[in-house]
Amino acid sequence: MSRKYFGTDGIRGRVGDHPVTADFMLKLGWAAGKVFGQRQEGLKLILLGKDTRVSGYMFESALQAGIISAGVDVGLLGPMPTPAIAYLTTAFRAQAGIVVSASHNPYWDNGIKFFGHDGFKLPDEIELQIEEYLELPMDTSESRDLGRANRVADAAGRYIEFCKGTLPAGFALKGLKLVIDCANGATYHVAPSVFRELGAEVVEVASNPDGININEDCGSTRPSLLQQTVVDESADMGIAFDGDGDRVMFVDHLGEIVDGDELLFVIADYRQRKGGCSGVAGTLMTNFGLELALKERNIPFVRTKVGDRYVIEAMRDNRWKLGGESSGHIVCSDLTTTGDGVVAALQVLQAMKDSDDSLNHLKQAMQKFPQVMINVALQEQIDLQAPTIQQAVSQAEAKLSGKGRVLLRPSGTEPVIRVMVEGENSEQVDNLAKDVARAVEQAVV
Image 1 (cartoon, rainbow, N blue to C red):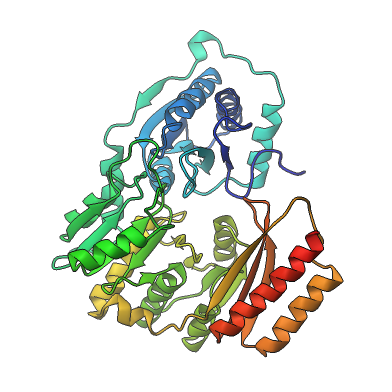
Image 2 (image 1 turned 45 degrees about the horizontal axis):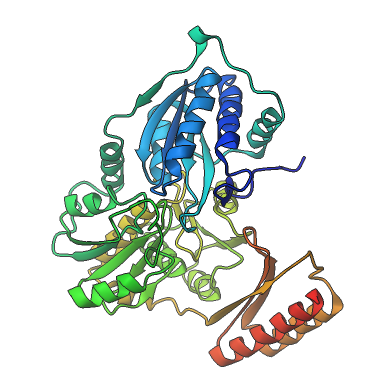
């Protein structure tokens, strides 16, 4: 059965466009309350948190009303990172956690993510059950059976302590000067505290959310502000999160970006040297250089479809503890149940401190392959197996001579086909990507 509302990462869209409306969120809260209220896992409680975009207040209230009408209690967390809500859901033995966030999208978008009682994203069958209730008339529990809402005291402090607790006792960041870019998002009141309490000197940027400046020219998707600040402040490095805190990017002391693939390598290499890394799960977009670097270190590697749920599935299937995406969505399953930007950043810093080495030097042990991505806009569905497209792909692969990749995939969030080419020579990669993109464009016409 196909899903009507849920995508690969919950429900997301432009505020005011169905289903990202107040009336739908009211019904969604009721449907979720009905489904989880019938289950026997955890307390009859759903935690509800959000990022800092202005529409979060509206959707928080609508979801709260819907959940209460279904007879389930609500724990209000306020602005909190997505991974914090996953952690707190398990800590409070709640039946579920709901995040109101559109992650790295601009403020005019918003969305919903769910976590089950175990802190993991929901399995398909529960999402389908929620969708089934969305098709039913909404009712209201008897007054005596209505849920109640309570503000969770010190949610931020609990998460800060959890993050610090992922490091060995006595570990400190004394002597490091860090620039922390919070994307004017959900980490604004927790991330700087984590690093300060571990002893680092912290310079904050983009940590003053106003409801509409989330991800605006800042954060992990737009790191130029961080790069400039690191250089201007003569900092040891910079750390940028996205709007909901599940992604992280670094900038080294030279102002150079260190992306998710390189961070994943730094963590995996450190773990392999310290006792062994069982394996790493990446995606179709993971840089070929990471695959080669892991192979040289005898670390198993597997690619999945793009999306953290597929990475986590592969990790669980293989019983591995590490996986992630180029975007900086890194999962350390021995520490967390989902991608956590702060926890991943601490793992990188631990590797640096224990190795007594700079991030710039550690990342050089992995040689990134030049990678070019071109988005081809679509008006309608096209067949990527069309002879003209496949011929262009075959010709490009032949020119790469087994030392690169060609990948075509439809975007899960935009009406585009992503054309990616990777290889040793940047000029060749750029030309081949344009050739394949041209073939796709002609097929669209």
